[in-house]
Image (cartoon, rainbow, N blue to C red; front, side):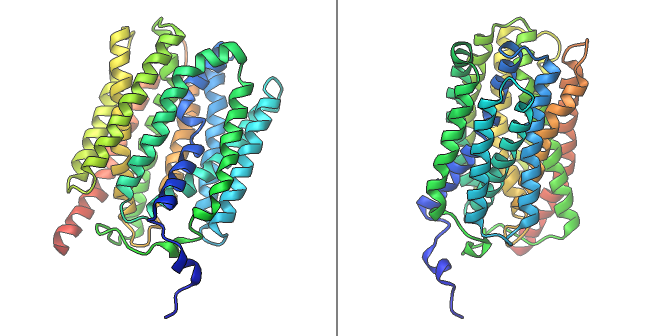
Length: 390
């Protein structure tokens, strides 16, 4: 059978292809990865309440979530390069509108529009990485890229906001997003570009896949609750804005180590153990923040939380992606991830009250526990299927 010319000339595993997918993945989360600093800035610079700030980023993340759902629903009916171009243009427009409408009623809709564009970019970039023969490793490299940016961004953001306000931040987001248009020729057009199936992939039915996707949703609900509120928790513990920013910067540096460790361990037959360690440990570090944490305990908690988040995420997504032979589960998995990250701040905004952050922290720990319970079944079933095949 004659192969389509575009498939002959394009290699999803080539370095330019993988690098382009990783860059676009970083563009997709360009706002989310510095979200604690954004939330803190909305409170300190724009004088919003804690709940209002959570709602702003929550609405943006719901735009992200909606876009990932739409991308999953569209599937391959639209050429992926064309879809990426549309997403990049929407994200750029939303970020520019955010800078222009910062102090007016159009600001929140502008962030929702930016969320739509960036959410589609996130979904597509993860899908591109999921087509490669080593998705665990490539997702980990992607995390190293975004965490390096996130560390610098969280450290510099308070000073930038104090000196210049939010406008140049959103303009920067727009410029970097626009650069992504130069990489379209290095992207796949459809899943037909997957030349080799992951050696650990097996085909499972909709029930197992559905439970696994629910686990991804619960895990990211926990992450969304925690990530949106870490800076506010530090401020409530009477830490200065720059101290909190420095701690979050260090947590991003430590998180790079977590992602690199997952690179080193990728391919080992211990996915279930890694997932359990990452989820249980993340819940424990958030539990340490209950009450009034000291400066040292806050630093330890945010660093441990961020290390384990970025250590375990490649294993979770790799495990879910291996439940289908054609790589089609990655797109709905990213949709569940973004829905969880979007709902997290909105849920926490409803839970915030006079009692401080205890209810929020307990809810976060609860979602961690639920995610572990949901993911355990599919991971064990996959391991048994591999054992039978061997």
